[in-house]
Image 1 (tube, one colour):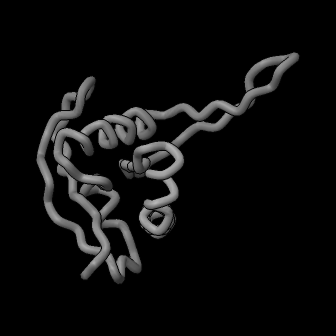
Image 2 (cartoon, rainbow, N blue to C red):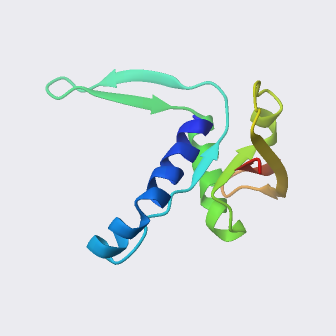
Amino acid sequence: MINCFFGIQKIIQDLRSAYINKYGAIPTIRAGLHGGQVIVTWIGELRKEIVYVGDVLNTTARIQEKCKRLGKDFLISEKLLFKMKNSEGLEAQFAEETVLRGKKKLIRLYSIEMAT
Protein backbone atom coordinates (compact mmCIF):
# COMPACT_ATOMS: atom_id res chain seq x y z
CA MET A 1 0.00 0.00 0.00
CA ILE A 2 2.68 2.49 0.99
CA ASN A 3 4.91 1.68 -1.98
CA CYS A 4 1.88 1.99 -4.26
CA PHE A 5 1.25 5.53 -2.99
CA PHE A 6 4.82 6.63 -3.69
CA GLY A 7 4.74 4.85 -7.06
CA ILE A 8 1.68 6.89 -8.05
CA GLN A 9 3.38 10.08 -6.89
CA LYS A 10 6.41 9.25 -9.04
CA ILE A 11 4.24 8.61 -12.11
CA ILE A 12 2.49 11.96 -11.58
CA GLN A 13 5.87 13.70 -11.34
CA ASP A 14 7.12 11.92 -14.46
CA LEU A 15 4.01 13.09 -16.36
CA ARG A 16 4.14 16.60 -14.91
CA SER A 17 4.62 18.35 -18.27
CA ALA A 18 1.85 16.35 -19.93
CA TYR A 19 -0.61 17.26 -17.15
CA ILE A 20 0.27 20.94 -17.35
CA ASN A 21 -0.05 20.96 -21.15
CA LYS A 22 -3.37 19.12 -21.20
CA TYR A 23 -5.09 20.31 -17.99
CA GLY A 24 -3.10 23.32 -16.82
CA ALA A 25 -2.51 21.70 -13.42
CA ILE A 26 -0.75 18.80 -11.76
CA PRO A 27 -2.85 16.37 -9.71
CA THR A 28 -1.93 15.79 -6.09
CA ILE A 29 -2.79 12.82 -3.91
CA ARG A 30 -2.96 12.42 -0.15
CA ALA A 31 -3.41 9.31 1.95
CA GLY A 32 -4.22 8.29 5.50
CA LEU A 33 -3.47 4.86 6.86
CA HIS A 34 -4.80 3.12 9.95
CA GLY A 35 -5.54 -0.46 10.88
CA GLY A 36 -8.29 -2.47 12.50
CA GLN A 37 -11.24 -4.71 11.84
CA VAL A 38 -13.57 -4.09 8.92
CA ILE A 39 -16.84 -5.86 8.21
CA VAL A 40 -17.54 -6.61 4.55
CA THR A 41 -21.04 -7.50 3.38
CA TRP A 42 -23.27 -7.59 0.32
CA ILE A 43 -26.44 -5.48 0.30
CA GLY A 44 -29.31 -5.18 -2.13
CA GLU A 45 -31.50 -7.64 -3.97
CA LEU A 46 -31.70 -6.34 -7.52
CA ARG A 47 -28.47 -4.42 -7.56
CA LYS A 48 -25.89 -6.02 -5.28
CA GLU A 49 -23.25 -3.82 -3.71
CA ILE A 50 -20.29 -4.57 -1.46
CA VAL A 51 -20.27 -2.46 1.71
CA TYR A 52 -17.39 -1.96 4.14
CA VAL A 53 -18.26 -1.03 7.72
CA GLY A 54 -16.09 -0.29 10.71
CA ASP A 55 -14.68 2.45 12.89
CA VAL A 56 -11.30 1.99 11.21
CA LEU A 57 -12.73 3.41 7.97
CA ASN A 58 -13.97 6.54 9.72
CA THR A 59 -10.67 6.98 11.55
CA THR A 60 -8.68 6.53 8.34
CA ALA A 61 -10.81 9.16 6.58
CA ARG A 62 -10.22 11.58 9.45
CA ILE A 63 -6.47 10.95 9.28
CA GLN A 64 -6.50 11.66 5.54
CA GLU A 65 -8.37 14.93 6.22
CA LYS A 66 -5.45 16.06 8.40
CA CYS A 67 -2.98 15.81 5.49
CA LYS A 68 -3.91 19.13 3.93
CA ARG A 69 -3.91 21.09 7.19
CA LEU A 70 -0.54 19.65 8.20
CA GLY A 71 0.94 20.04 4.72
CA LYS A 72 1.70 16.30 4.46
CA ASP A 73 0.95 13.87 1.65
CA PHE A 74 0.83 10.68 3.73
CA LEU A 75 -0.15 10.27 7.38
CA ILE A 76 -0.26 7.06 9.39
CA SER A 77 -1.51 6.31 12.89
CA GLU A 78 1.07 5.41 15.51
CA LYS A 79 -0.85 2.20 16.17
CA LEU A 80 -0.27 0.97 12.63
CA LEU A 81 3.22 2.42 12.27
CA PHE A 82 4.51 0.35 15.17
CA LYS A 83 2.98 -2.81 13.67
CA MET A 84 4.59 -2.28 10.28
CA LYS A 85 7.33 -4.59 9.14
CA ASN A 86 9.79 -3.97 6.37
CA SER A 87 9.60 -0.18 6.33
CA GLU A 88 13.00 -0.02 4.66
CA GLY A 89 13.38 3.04 2.46
CA LEU A 90 10.72 4.98 4.39
CA GLU A 91 11.05 7.68 7.02
CA ALA A 92 8.40 8.33 9.63
CA GLN A 93 8.30 11.68 11.41
CA PHE A 94 5.96 12.64 14.24
CA ALA A 95 3.36 15.05 12.87
CA GLU A 96 0.73 15.64 15.55
CA GLU A 97 -1.12 14.32 18.56
CA THR A 98 -4.78 15.18 18.16
CA VAL A 99 -8.38 14.19 18.74
CA LEU A 100 -9.86 13.49 15.33
CA ARG A 101 -13.23 14.93 14.37
CA GLY A 102 -16.00 12.79 15.87
CA LYS A 103 -13.59 10.92 18.18
CA LYS A 104 -12.81 11.13 21.88
CA LYS A 105 -9.35 9.60 22.20
CA LEU A 106 -6.03 11.19 21.34
CA ILE A 107 -4.23 9.72 18.37
CA ARG A 108 -0.61 10.23 17.36
CA LEU A 109 0.00 10.76 13.66
CA TYR A 110 3.22 10.39 11.71
CA SER A 111 4.08 11.53 8.20
CA ILE A 112 5.64 8.95 5.92
CA GLU A 113 8.15 9.92 3.24
CA MET A 114 10.67 8.14 1.08
CA ALA A 115 14.10 8.06 2.68
CA THR A 116 16.62 10.31 0.97
